[in-house]
Image: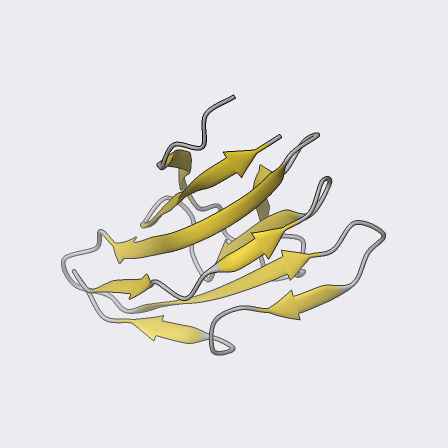
Length: 111
């Protein structure tokens, strides 16, 4: 398998007040280097908050963006700090409202 930069996930986040969130990518049988991710608030009038986590296989959850990151209407947040996901690790995101925050994750899978 060649190591090629690719879109690992693209999703419109669901709302979550319970903390369950959306698991948007799981490194299934591969090690993955997440090179960047982008969060975009598609609302033209309202700010929303977002949370993002790295879930280590086995359950440990670590925040990867500031807690309750506020995105103003039309604003984008780009994080280009690399994150290494071992096999079965995941990325999880949640928004304060459904169907307004878009999330795209870029990276390289290595088997």
